[in-house]
Image (tube, rainbow, N blue to C red; front, side, top):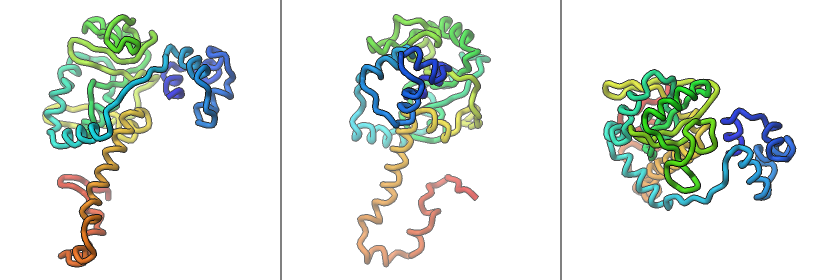
Length: 257
């Protein structure tokens, strides 16, 4: 998290260390996981980035699993409509962007929760993005008060890159250059999205949800064999089916060649 925040603000380890009153080597060891810092140092480092530590709550694992299961039964068209994705993208106009995070995962078929449209925007387009937020009556998420409002809109200003607008909620990942993208089509619309492998490398929350979904899918596929008796397994019509990789692929899925 520290490395991600530092990179998002385009600071070197030395620059962050100077701001926080520590050494570059200390920052490097913390980012590599080689040092467990005390709370005072953690608070100084994040304060130097315009951030603060907060205690949050999240869904119980059982509730999250139930939500993922429910999402898996819904059509992609319904989820896109519920998110208000097409409406918001139409309003973004010609602002250069890519879809990322949970939004990109959703469009690639992953049943993960998505509570806002997530985009990647270049820092050099920040002024245009800020102007769009102003025109869209944007309000920025205030982590301290757990509500929107009371903070400057510009991404350069301290605060989460999360806003509410008249067209829906939006999160932005600010970057020097837009990452490589792929194009996916659904219905009459085409979307430029970050590939899932990139989502997992750059978005810890989305990555955790994707790993959870895959683990549960693997567990569900293994459950029938786990419950079967040896006699049951010996009496299958096709004794090789349990070892056939294609048997784990759902209808419509494509396997690599």
